[in-house]
Image 1 (cartoon, rainbow, N blue to C red):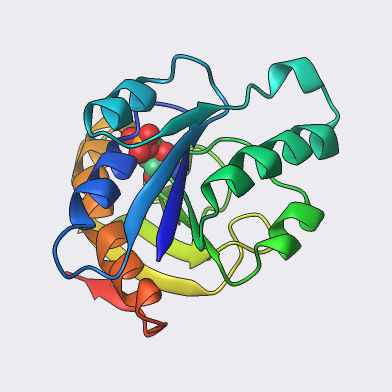
Image 2: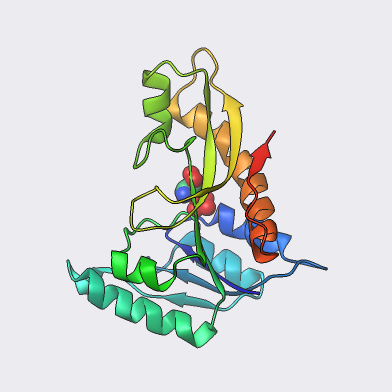
Length: 195
Ligand code: GRF
């Protein structure tokens, strides 16, 4: 399977995914694409020998469809079977999501369906939750709403801030996403639950 990874920032999840696709793994990374020129993950992908592309969303203004047309063209050149959104911070239209239905994954830093959207760790702490974590799901038109393919849980500790909690969740993302991608690439949609 050919995997394209979409990023907007540092790409730590992209690195974890790319490093996992070795040996007898059924998938290989064929492209790392960012909507942000100069995103840190682009240099990390290049250092790993993975082709990269940039489709800057800013010239398109509010015209999401035009941005996604350019995005689709860049993706088609790499001909991926699976898209992995990994710290990709653009909301995709229903049209794009439908075109990739069943072939597009995302990682979200909360125990979905709780805390869709942004500032997930601060919200979990404010709510007095005792657990937090991350979820990998199939992308559908509903933001952070598709079928769950995996979850990883961590405790919320006394005195946690959004930063200390994020630092506890992120390493679990780097375990969860590769585990889910491997199963997904093998056609297995049974959920991965960590620890
Ligand atoms: C992570 O918290 C991830 O859950 C979210 O984006 C953040 C940064 O990810 N999707 P990365 O380091 O760019 O992979």
